[in-house]
Length: 193
Image (cartoon, rainbow, N blue to C red; front, side, top):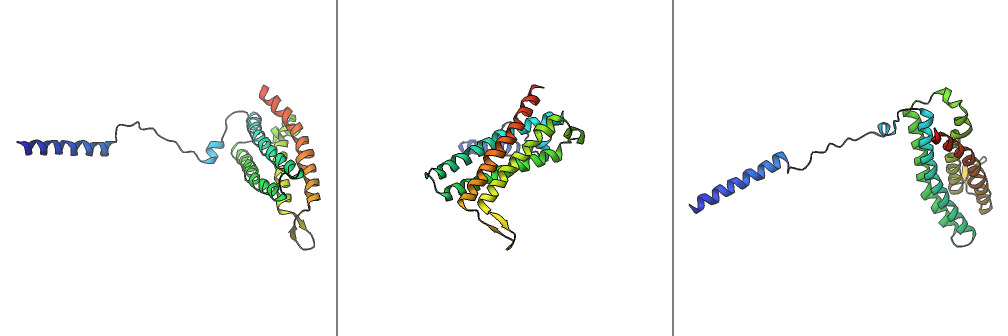
């Protein structure tokens, strides 16, 4: 009798185990939808408004990178960090800036942006500067870390400290502030719509 009970309990345990394995443990069956980058970047609605939404996000992230570069530059200029520390910060920032450029390219590829919209004042006098401000930061990082092309040797020649300072002033201060001053009002105006 004792062995029969053991066999029934063992059989029952096997049936329960098998059904748990075969049919799951009763957890919720959540369906996870995986989107391609193109699907994730697709936006519905007004293309100018959509670009303004994305430009506001990208500018916020670029401002953070700009701030880190500025802090590192100031530390280098004040002797609190080495030139190598500054260049390492730029190399870290490079991936973020290039990522923003790629996000913009993807957004423009998957979201129809009519030529007529490019003639609107909000775009040509404002939103177009989003692309320019990212390119400015990217160009500065490249010149400071890689140098400039020497026409005679056709190789990149590293910049001197004074050249880096000049390029920083021209790109990260003057152009950055000029482009941001043109972009920001367009973002403010588009967000009031």
